[in-house]
Length: 77
Image 1: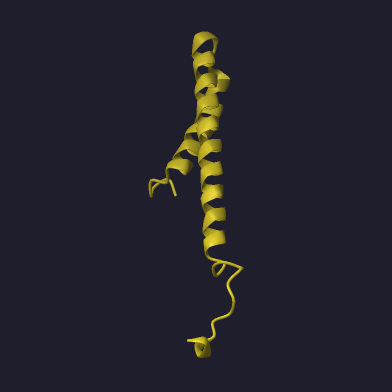
Image 2 (image 1 turned 120 degrees about the horizontal axis):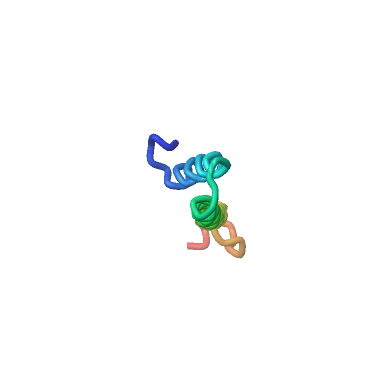
C-alpha cells in the first residue's frame, strides 16, 4: 500500500519508525519525536474516522433507496 501512495499507510509507517527511533533519543530530540508521534497519531485517527464515516455513508446509499417507497407497479401508470 505504501508503494501505491496510500497516505494513511504512509502515516502509519512513519509513526512506527518514529516509535522505534524514539527509544534511542534523549532530551529535546526525544521530546520533539514524541510530539511528532502524537501529531501522526492524531492525523491517523482523523483519517480513519473519515474513512469509516464515508464507508457507512456508502453502505446507506447502496441499500436500494428509500425504505418508504412502495414497490413499483407498472399497471398504476
